[in-house]
Image (tube, rainbow, N blue to C red; front, side, top):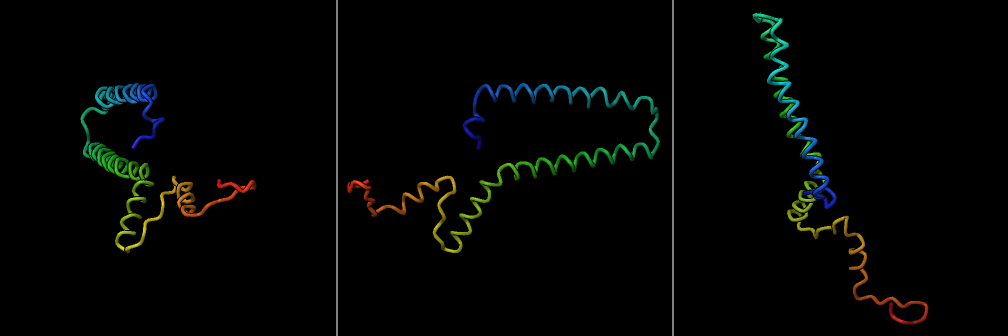
Amino acid sequence: GLEPEQQDPVELEKAYKWITRRGYVLTIVLIFVWPLLSIPAGKFSESYFAFWVLVAIVWGFGAAVIITVLPLIDDQEAILKVLGGMMNWMLCRSPEPPMEYEDDAKSTEMVGKVEIDDIGEEA
């Protein structure tokens, strides 16, 4: 999920404007500019057409890889946490405390123990 600082409405508005602006530019380029650049070629030869088919296939595979891999990289911490929990469950091990709660793990070790400070009072 999103971190609290990523949920800030100001940051979300900036991100919305950034992606919207680039989306409009890319749309104009792909719908108008790119086809206009092919006009000087006139009638496509078979090899020229094959080149553009190859470009479309490479573009499609590249996009498929990007939209598959980037989310996995972005959420790898959560995915590894889930896989670790599944592995612990399958091997009947007690789960390790999450890394973000290391202080809590240390404090649970102190349960039942009483610390005495220098004055002799319980801490």
